[in-house]
Amino acid sequence: MFEGFHREFVRCGETDIHAVIGGDGPPLLLLHGYPETHLMWHRIADDLARHFTVVCPDLRGYGDSAKPPGDPAHETYAKRAMALDQAILMGKLGFETYGVAGHDRGARVARRLALDHPDAVSKLAVLDIIPTHVVFDRIDQVVATKYSHWFYMLDPELPEHFIGLDPAYWLTAKLRAWSADPDAFEPAIVEQYIRCLSTPEAIHATCEDYRAGASIDLEHDREDAEDPIECPVLVLWGAEGLVGRHYDPLAIWRDEADGPVEGHALDCGHFLPEEAPEATRDALIAFFDG
Image (cartoon, rainbow, N blue to C red; front, side, top):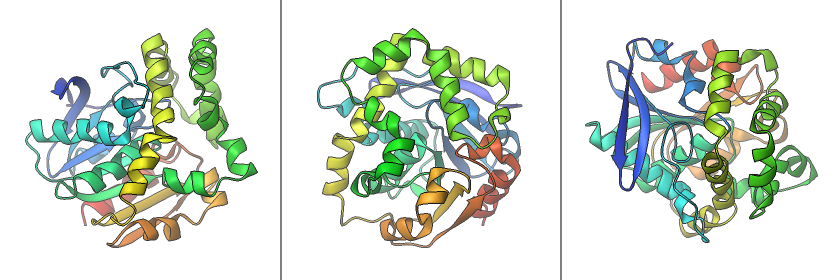
């Protein structure tokens, strides 16, 4: 996996971002979700690198990237701040324009990157999410139950304490709960996910990511309500997950974008690149190479 890739730590503002980079061709930025790291792309990164220069960072607060402490307004982990990290990273790597694909929390960062830096993002792919403001606006019992961690992690103290008692259990429980195939995750990769989530700094940072989602991120969305995504958008989702069963993803994303929006469901749960790697790979290549 990641054959021929090299690692870099890049200073992005006041945050050091860890990334692996490989391949040749137009640049493609891949952003991971919770509770994972850049390693979630391991099944498809090598194939994508035959078509693109692939950049797989760990988001601020995740993996081996820096984990600055949160602040009362949660601005440190606002998607605007996390997206700016990625804009600076790509600029320092010499890429003025690039495609972006994000999964889960990474898709929320990718969406904000496309909104805040429209001249940089040529195409956007979002994997298995509905925009945060839509989730909160349409909340019901089904979503509140399936996304219970969204609300649990808003408490200012409890989640850090209780996740910290057994981060391996918390992480593997989430992988099982959100996937249609719990055997899709390679044990060695899961060990790395656990390693990266098992420090107090990482647990706090990832909780702050969710706290920002329920506060400062919504403020930014309200401010930008009249500013649609300008670039073409690919929407992929797992047919067996909440997004596929509870929403009309294409209709929702077409309300968010000015340009063309295409997409389809894949036969899997939430973790598309690990549960349905070939289908995810083929869809991304067709979209970004087209």
